[in-house]
Length: 125
Image (cartoon, rainbow, N blue to C red; front, side, top):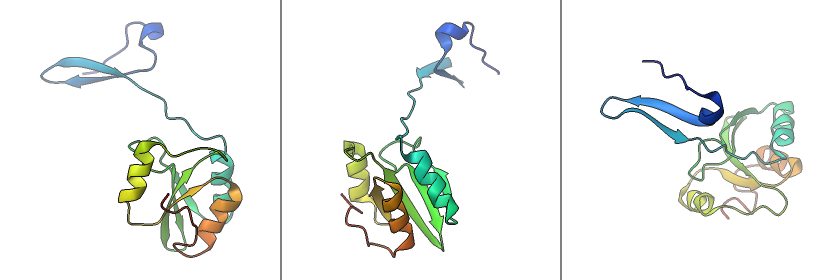
């Protein structure tokens, strides 16, 4: 079954799905905010040969990008200079046992991927 919004003005931003027992149901889609420095960090990482997958839309505290570089998988949470982790992000970092870092600039992101594991002090805030 294909669901078509009946009024584009009132249905904009809603996600509709078909649930067999309940019929058409919808919920408000909340856009995930992308940090203003994310695009430049992704571009710089790709220039040095990283494979970068944006993951900021995953939610539940999961980091903003996943980076592959020289056989490593590195998760990066991108924050502005004064940005703070949300409670969900703090919980995620406390539970995660792999390579994950908080970076605030292109320079920090490049340092993280070019140096070995565990070299950045803010790896588990």
